[in-house]
Length: 314
Image 1 (cartoon, rainbow, N blue to C red):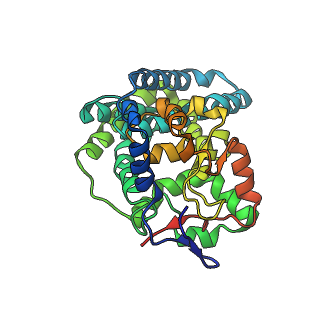
Image 2: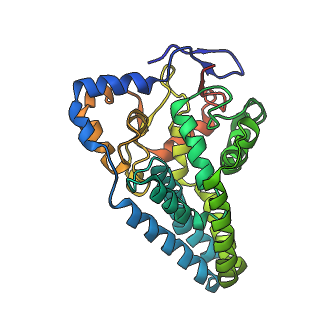
């Protein structure tokens, strides 16, 4: 647990290093067998390609549905797959599908296809910052800005922000920490433009709307969107990262095992439950969740939790 200080209308501020570095060293000293969990997940590439094929296939044929079944399929199936693909990209970002970084990048481009916007390779850069400079002011773009936190207050404000947080995640990095386009980002943009130019004439406007709404719902009022809140919003003072151990881990690459993931980013999600079992004394005493829906409801209605409920360091 870190020593946090907080003033009204401000974030939690700490002076010590993020907690995962120290816990990683302690766990490795106590349980060196954890190293056996390092490495790639051989199934990740197959699961990712399967999800891409299913999502694009639905987009091709969804024009046959009237508006209500269209929305139902989009919310229940499309948003669930979109969320899974976002988290597949998260896994691939850590080079957990192939030993080769190049092959991981290529798979990330493929996983990006149903997301429409070329996002995967920029996410890779920003996500590395989130891990190695967790909470660092002006670097970790996972944390809301002061403008966001001051604007979206109270139940209505938090609800509106949560419903539209996908836009915050898309545009916040541009203002907080702009980066220069690198080779793989340009590949990402070019590949996505060509792929969409080929695909969309077949899918039509209904297919495009399906893909876009799937992404929107995945980052909005959808059970899997609870992970955006559960991971780092401070519900228990002194704790910076939180894990979720509920059933939705089964369709989100175990992203809920978030303390475990930050402690060992080189362990694929499929093996994070084994990490917890190997070192329970380091995780069982931490505050955790069993319901992402419960986290969403608590975030919106708990007056003590708001967009300032994040831990930052200078």
